[in-house]
Each structure stands twice: as C-alpha cells, then as structure tokens.
Length: 177
Image (cartoon, rainbow, N blue to C red; front, side, top):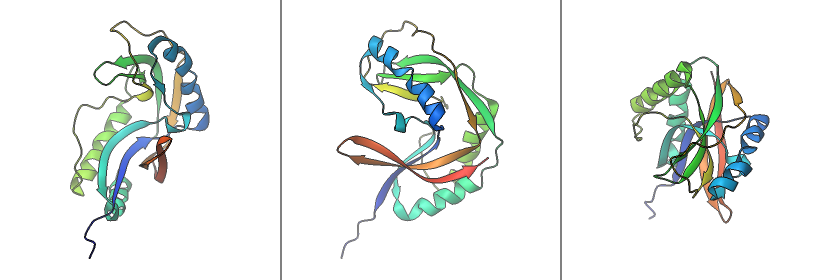
C-alpha cells in the first residue's frame, strides 16, 4: 500500500500582462551587463504575494477557498527602481513606494490562509520582480530604469514545476479584486 501523499509547490502572486512583462524584461540586458548572472525567462516574471511551498495536492481546494475570501480593491503598482540583494545574489525590480492596497491584499491573504491552517514564512513584505539570479554587485546603486506600471485587477495561485529547462510556472486559478 502506497501511503505517500502527492505534494505540489505553490505560491500566490501578481501576474503581469504580456506588455508589462515585456517592459520589465527590457531591464534585463543592461542589468546583466553590469551584474552577470542568469537572466530569468520572461514568462516567469511575477511578484510573489505569499509563498506556501510544498503542500499536499488535496489542499489546493482549501488554498483557492482562502483566496476567494480575500476582499481587496484594484490598484496600480509602479516598478521604478533596480536593486540588488547580496545575501541571495538577486537583481530585481522594485517599486519606489508600495501601494497601501498591496499591503492590505497581502495581509488579508495571509489571514485567510492562516484561518485555513496553511503555514508560511511571515516576514515584512517586500514586493519585487526577480530579473537576474546568481548576480554579483556591490552596495552601489544600480542605474535608473524606465518605470513600468502594472494595473492590478486580480491575483493568481501558481504551481512551480521543474523540468530540464529549470522552473516553469503554471497559473492554477485567478482571483479578481
């Protein structure tokens, strides 16, 4: 008898449109010239809201129910700053200011997931879009990049899958704001 439970690796995210994703991907060549590293595939660019990690596949329905309980309003977020985290060697796009609606969305999602008994790492939320991995840079500021504004009208539940080309993401469900 097989008692293993199927696991899936999932997270909630803001998922950009193709034009928003293309605008952020346009930052990558100049950042790569400065920092090196591995350029993230354009189809993987996103902003994580809450990372659940490995959960039992039969819990996906509960995760979707938790997301459906979230009440938030649409908003815009402007990524206008390139930054670098030395602790994990990531170059990323960040907003100069975080919209209060985004902070509320994350807080409500975390509360709902907690009510549904999901465990996740709680830490101060820092919205970003990873553009390069294994990058090397100093504490110096990165050059200015053209601002990219996303219109946020929903969020998604995403499954992270691995294949010979690395990680790929599949949107499992969308939740309107």
